[in-house]
Length: 84
Image 1 (cartoon, one colour):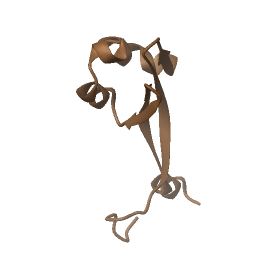
Image 2 (spheres, one colour):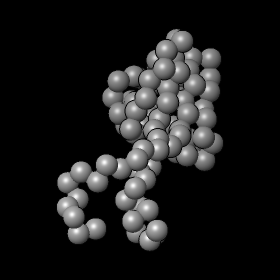
Image 3 (tube, helix red, strand yellow):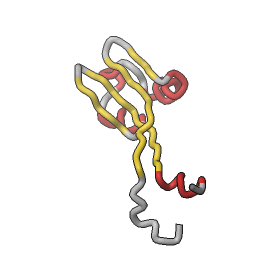
């Protein structure tokens, strides 16, 4: 299988996982997380999470746990045409 073809078969996206009050929430970006929850609710500032989550992978305090992970999906090649 050609490497370029393999690239189109798999997609990987960053996902932010928030565990808060026994519930789990998933976001496509740190900004979208902070659009829904304030610094006070999470116990972390947007700046602190943006600058540290990538390096640490997990940030935890007495209010919540924020994790960064990878969402892996198989591409359906919809809308790509037949010339790939």
